[in-house]
Image 1: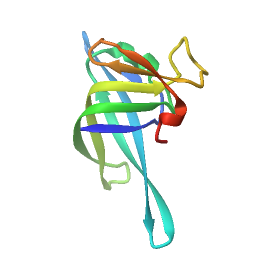
Image 2: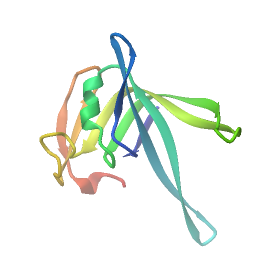
Image 3: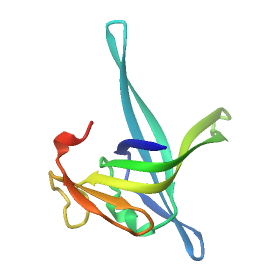
Image 4: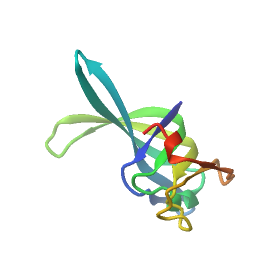
Length: 133
C-alpha cells in the first residue's frame, strides 16, 4: 500500500535491542469531501515504523511531505481514562521524501525527492507546486 502525507513531528530513533534500531514517525493524510453544500476536511494519522536504515531519521522533519510504501495494521490499546482506543500503524518498506529539510538544504523552498530503501538513495528535483497538498 502507498500513502502520501505530512509528518506530524520529527522522526525518533529507538533502540529495540543491542544492534537493532527502528525509526518511528507519524504521517497525517488529509482528505476532503462535500456533504451537501458543506466541504468537510478529515485527517487520518498513521503511526509508521521503518526498520531498514535508522540514518533516514535525520531527513524526516515535521511538516515535510513523504510518500511511504508498506503494510497497514491496527493497534488496539486502553487509554489512561480506561477507554478502548485504536491506532492505524504502517510498517514502512520504502520512503520517498519531498521536503527541503535535509541538513544541507534546511529552509529550501525546492523539494528534493529521495527514495530510502535499505540505504539505496535516488534523487530528483520536484517543485512544491507538484505536491498535492
